[in-house]
Image 1 (spheres, rainbow, N blue to C red):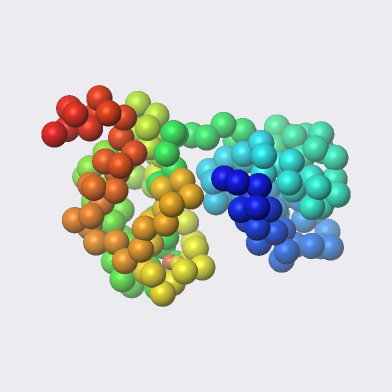
Image 2: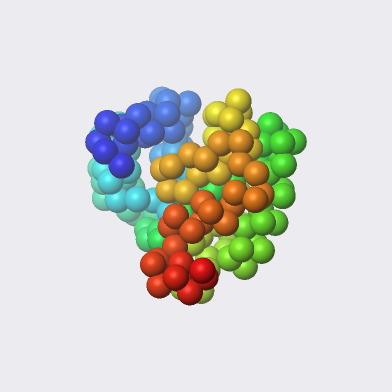
Length: 163
Ligand code: FES
């Protein structure tokens, strides 16, 4: 993620909590939910934005087991289960992902290639149903497209073995 995009994302996450008591933990929750861990560069930006020492952020992250410092998988696959996506078939996408790579939301493939998570509205309901892999957004996804999307991120050896 480039610096500009990173700032924009952090801004989006921090804004609703600005000036509110206990906002650091709420912001960290949002970050953990969005990325499945708290990326280091995001922590730096949050420290600047909320004007708290970075050490304080790491204190909170390490105190609560809920927060993770490492990405749980190489590629984070997020399936939006917000209302629009849900109604347009997101549960079928979750089923298809499980069929393809054998993991449900909250799980990571044994080879660490993919971590799958269900997320709330990603803010682009007009594109429902939406999947993201890393920062890339896939819109109006049909179950039959899932295999192709995942194949874009599979290691060459895995892709070759599958073909
Ligand atoms: S409900 Fe999925 S993007 Fe809004």
